[in-house]
Image (cartoon, rainbow, N blue to C red):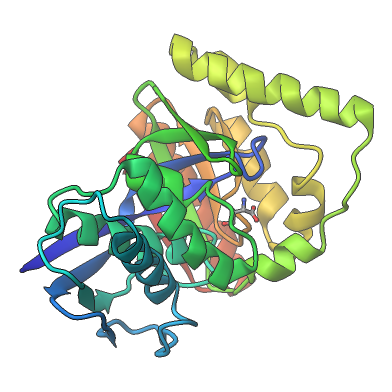
Length: 306
Ligand code: HSE
């Protein structure tokens, strides 16, 4: 049995919701071909342009599939097509690692979603997130779920709690999403290390006001409330220093009429949300001009929620 799937890029944090909010977008995406084997073995092949670790333990998809196989072996109540299973995975990676667009999540989530389809939906979405989080642990040292959850559920998700896992899929009005990926690499582990470990109470109050406002705005299809809530005084001031052109793009977004935006995941990609497609196109043009002037190569996507 064999299957081919698309694993979408994701925007984690959504500015104010560090490690808890995320959304899946239509572009870019990875293409993954998975074959089910009837013996316990994982074979990894990479046909994309970006090098990926070849050893199963160091490869995020390998780690996620290992977790799924372990659960399969350990649970006698499952309806198993074979006593033992394994997989051959061929990845055509198009989401650049270190882009802040959930490249590792696409690999680990995509692999277990494809595996589950080959196993006729043996596992729940929540279980798939648990397996994929092993991949995130390999990638960044932390089992965060804010990329893998939207990658698996689609749309916008809230990870109310990672341990124990509690994922709440959220509604959203139609949104146009502009993403620019300057071709500099920011490793998630580095971008986490530089963060302050303590927060002032008055800053925390602003932050949870914004998170609640964003969630309420998504439920109420209230574009103004969504825009007003896209603000972050905890993570962005530290991380944005690593991203040339960040403030210019953010200011221009406001001036052009975008709802708001900020760093995608741990960066360096920057995203902007817009109500109108024309606004999304306009900010894409501006983003391109900024990086042209800075002499930094970039990719820009004008896309929508997946
Ligand atoms: N929430 C994580 C972070 C996402 O910001 O470090 C990493 O893509």
